[in-house]
Amino acid sequence: MNIKQRVIELLSEFEKGKYSNILLNEYFSKNNLSKGERGFITEVFYGVIRNDIYLNYQLEKRTKAVKKNWIKNLLKISIYQATFMESDDKGVAWEATELTKKKFGVPVSKFVNGVIRSYLREKDEEIQKLKEEDRLDLLYSYPKWFYDKIKKEYKENTEQVLISLKKVPYMSIRVNTLKYSEEEFETLLKTLKIDIIKKVDTIYYIDSGIVLHTDEFKDGKIIAQDGSSYLAAKILNPIAGEKVVDTCSAPGSKTAVLGELMNNTGEIYALDIHQHKIKIIEENLKKLGLTNVKAIKLDARKLKEQGQKFDKILVDAPCSGYGVLRKKPEALYNKNMANVNELAGLQYEILESAATTLKVGGDLVYSTCTIFSEENSDNVEKFLNNHKNFSVQKFEMPENVNGHFDKIGGFLIDYTEEILDNFYIIKLRKDFE
Image 1: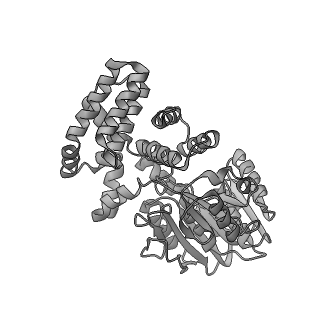
Image 2: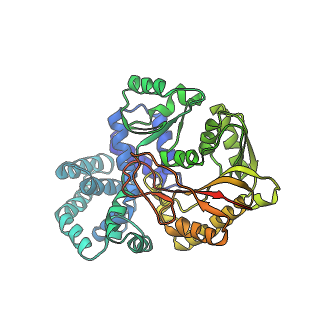
Image 3: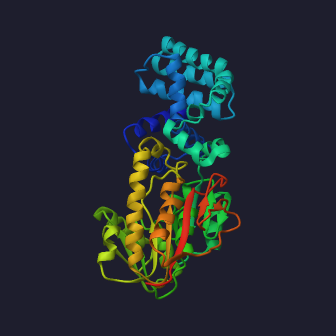
């Protein structure tokens, strides 16, 4: 099968409601493809999803409604290649025409050829016009409200932020030190001819997802996890024998980091509001060899009603997810500012509930995988104003992780970070009751 036909097939499945990252991983596990083929499919598949607003805008200017999804997706792929990849424009038009000719015949192939060549003639002029008219929302495919929000928060850095959130993500893998070593993993990578792009502690960013189909992954020696998620758990710094709670645990990857840091001792309570996610947490932690964790179905807002006190608490709160758009680009299209404000309220309730159960002298890490102040610094400032018995604690970030500390002492892994997810992390201590 032609490689573009594979992408069309994937886009068709995505349009039926499947999550992009799960869909792609499943496809690669079922199809024996070369490293180059997997790389091309990943870039184009995610690229079309990320740039859907721009691609639809260009199609609508040049066609009436395209009834066949196959044709529409081929046109989107072609325009994406010509705009965002270093492709030969004539070659892009020729290949699309030939693919269409084989599937639908000459008349339809002439239509496809005409649309693509029309775009190629006008591309540079149209891009320049969008910039001059301050339509970066169209150019970079963002809802208008989101673009306006980014402009308000990031001002002269707006375009850099928009570009950063559209970058192609790398596979990130963490070594489970309870079962495996970094040296063993690096040997495995050499055997599989996989290159390391970046390393943050025990997190490896690599140029292939084939490791997800190895015995090492099946046996829980390695786990898929981003460095930002890992750091949120590591910065809490639980020690052996402590009593710890992860308020929003599913699927359990941060809980696993806590368990490893505690060397499988003490007690960790992994909470989630959904029973089916409790089962996922239990399965994942069992595979990883964690025995000091108890998964509990509980709304984290009700933690304060349980009557227990904890040494350390991780509040990785439910959020809008705008820091992980590289991996989940569809998240951009299913929320709005009203959702952001609603989530901020939920986050605050969870933070406040958790705070009441923290022992004096205990630490709490609050984190989100989003970039808006409502869910990050604004929430924490509100909390500190209402809870004078808490203070912000200093912590260090690895030198090769980019971002900035805000005015209250939280760290935002931001648009300057090319590899890791955008994440907000702040550490608080309960000084007195």
